[in-house]
Image (cartoon, rainbow, N blue to C red; front, side, top):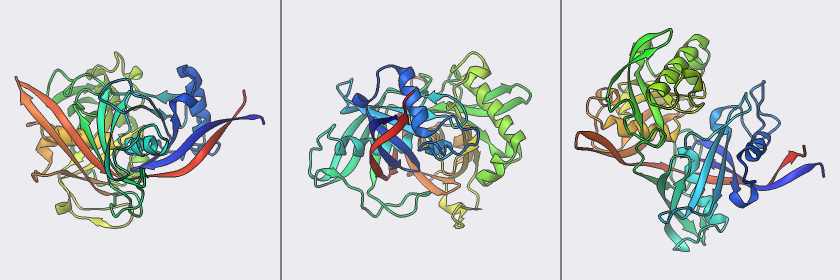
Amino acid sequence: MNQIEIPAAFYRGGTSKGVFFREEDLPAERAERDEIFLQVIGSPDPYGRQLNGMGGGISSLSKVVSVGPPTRDDADVDYTFGQVAVDRTEVDYSTNCGNLSSAVGPFAIDEGLVTPNVSDGIATVRLHNTNTSVVIHAQISVDGGKAAVVGDFEIQGVFGTGSRIQLDYLEPGGATTGKFLPAAGEVISALDVPEEGTITVSMADAATGMVFIAADDLGLTATESPEAIDGDAILIAKLDRIRRAAGVAMGLANRPEDVPLTNPRVGLLAAPREFIALDGATVTADSQDITVRVLSLKNIHRVSPLTSALCLAAAVKVEGSLPNRIAQANGGDLRIGTPSGVLPVGAEVAHQDGLWQAVSTRSYRTARRLMQGSVLIPKT
């Protein structure tokens, strides 16, 4: 055979899809792994479709995860997330994927990497994300010793229902920058952006780094469809300049051109506003606490990257921050209006000794193994 076989499984986790590997089946050298991941996903692809691999041509469908034994006592498994660029030879490890995190526990159970403490019922699997050094407790329904798939829980952006998975992120502050509020502790900043001037933003890092902007300040409503924003090349370039300036301010690079591919992301915020979701349904203002559009890999996400939603939930609880000023308070989980509907997430923060701290964040997802066996890549 002129192709190499590598054991793998193909998963939907939340609103993303990716190829999952066991650590033992991958080479130790990062460069060798990257070559495998690029081949498996089908990158780089100047046509943007990844037809020669397992990817789907957009960031949420261009992902890989490796899972292996834990390297710390408070975890059951380690996992590493890789964001594979669609149009370039790059695999980015600077952040985590909250959606695919929901599939790590089921993968670990079904692969025999962990043994659940119940054969039927709710099991907790402790996940250590090596990208961010954050520990996540995944509460997973188990059926006959395997991760349950069937259930009545529905998430926006995915047709049908599944078994609910709760993810609790412990101490997620500073996941990529080392600080919950990485811009010298400021809750609001006047960001100097090349070619754009000064823009008012809030920067936060809980599960992932984010720069939040009031949509009104850019002449937007945050109710635009992803296609409408993606089709405006001038606007996308402007948002990327803001993103890169924020990355420098957050300490992720010394120069805008060196800011990582996936971090920070941009969150366009507005007070709750009615809009039409991607499935044609009307999302009312009173069903949301805040309306959001998130830029990821120079495209507007069809829902929201889950880690971005978690960061927003934490930032909303920081008094005086831009998200805090814009969001409607409801006393419970934050209801985020995304292009696909309403996404509920939660967070706990604390203000101690003059500093804001992200105590925990939580999300609710479903996941399903779609295919298992081996991926094939050409011998080189």
